[in-house]
Length: 214
Image (cartoon, rainbow, N blue to C red):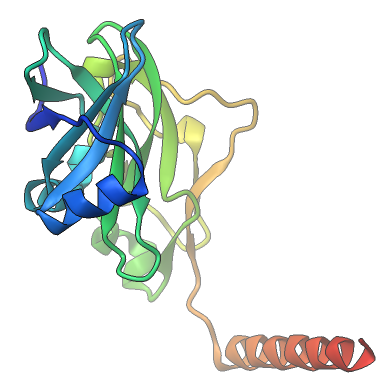
C-alpha cells in the first residue's frame, strides 16, 4: 500500500536545454531507477510536486508513480531532490523502486513530545535535540512518519539515549554506541552568555590574526 500517488509522463528529451523548456511549461523532470528494471525518465506537474515536498511525511513514505504510457506499477521511495541554489526551488527528483517487503534504511525525523510537562522544563530548563533524525531500518511499507521521544518525566540534566527510545515494531537503529538523542539542560545564566560572547570574540580575533599573517 502506498500513501501518495503521483501522475507522470514519459520524458523523451533529456539534457539541460530540454529541462529548461520543461520548467517553462510548469513541469519538473525526474527519474525512476532500480528494482532490476530499466530507468524511466519522467516529467511531473511542478505545482503538485512542490506541495508534496512541503509535507514531511512525503519524504519517508512509499509512493506510487503512475507513468502514462508505461506498463506496471512503480512503487518507489524519494531518494534525492535537486534544488536551485538561488531560487530555492526543486529542479529534479530521483525515485528508487521498492517492494513493500524490501528492507530499507531511511532518515526519519525525531520529535520531542510532552516536554512542556517535564519538571526540568517547568523549572526553566530547555530541551536540546542532539539528533534531529535517526537512520531507521525497516520494511518499505512500514516506514514511521517520525520517532517520538516522550520527555514528560525529564528532570534538569537528564539525557535520553537511543536505547531508551521504544521504536515502532519492525524498526531498528543500527548502532554500536548508546548515543545521546536529546537532553534537558539548565537555562543559561548571564555569566554563561558572557562567556559565549568572549569565546566568539576571541575566535573572531584569532581569525583576523590568521588572515593578517597570510
